[in-house]
Length: 322
Image 1: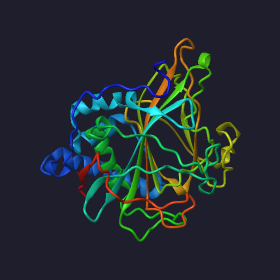
Image 2: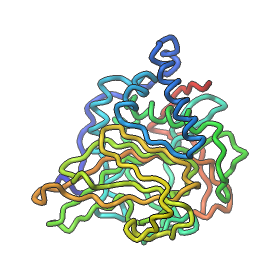
Image 3: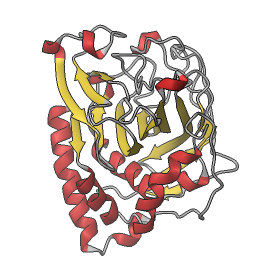
Image 4: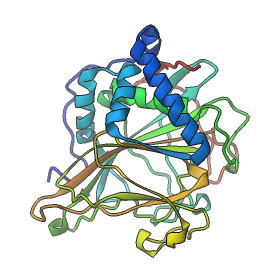
């Protein structure tokens, strides 16, 4: 069935590389930088921001994202592949190095992805190294996706965080793990979409960003995100949480609606994906971008980060920083 894991489409366009430096003499570039700096001020104070899609579109276009890519980025979730531990989700996955010293973002070689109970992630696959289909060229070569990585780097640069155990905070580099995830619900086929089956959790990250790409047949009250105080119990469902420990509520409903937060300052949860018309499946497409310092020897996941560049799908993205 086309809505289940593992559906693919042939690539239909060549990759683009966003060179943000080419836009330094465009007034819209500085309008975007001013908007980002205003959001960064909020991020420093409140430790999370939610940006409406229409505002994010203007920011990304000012950074140089191509207009045609705003359409094609809404189709990249058609390229997602099977999730190894969840039957209601399809995924692609890529690792990148954000390097402020060289002012660039580079694609890193693939590596298993693991989250553990010790990182406040309590699920049946906690501690299990998982491998996903790799980020396709159509996604990596989309200037909207590239501008989103630049946006995130500008927001979190220099923002102090509570250190996580066995991450190398002496390193100037950041590891950026980017997922494109499609969540499916089809009750008649026994598929029940849970954007966060693990309930209240953290993602072992320093900074987390989630971006809405689109949905089909999804009920409007689906997939609401709640930010919880770290005192909340890990692993419980949203409806079981203590309302006095809720620190924020956001709802991704429009293209490019974007949430970003300091991952170690909060736990979070997301409600289920429901069908609007029960006779047709529902889907929800997201980009989920985790950024943290490199893992050190002895990290609870059981391995260090490899910093080797990707041999077959390289990316070298120039990065502007004030």
